[in-house]
Length: 131
Image 1: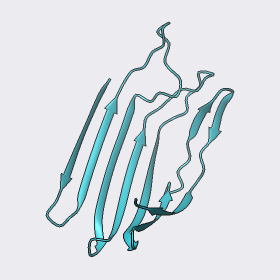
Image 2: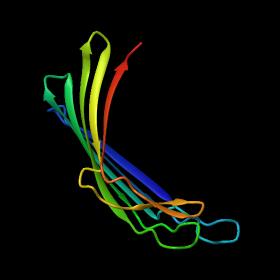
Image 3: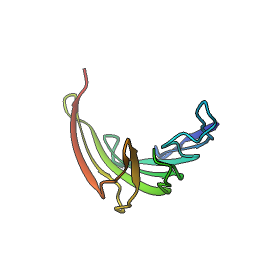
């Protein structure tokens, strides 16, 4: 397989990252490995919203077709995530709020007995303390 990535830090304090992975995975008997996509693509952009302490990030991910343990195709999917992060809100506390799977895309993941469906959209609020 091949993996590559690039990142850029622009003068306006905007950060952009991208990565791509292309692979063909086989087991010892030369059968396709389950839940191993041939293509993974990721693009991330982060920008300041207010001063340097509040940032917004958008990430887009593409996962290529995979097969489950029964040999069935799980298809490919595209999903996006958004995070708003406040740094050092109070002393050494950071806060963030994320929305995963912004568009409510549907995909399947492999299990030992077949496939399970993705969660349509999820939210996460987080508080972290820096030591």
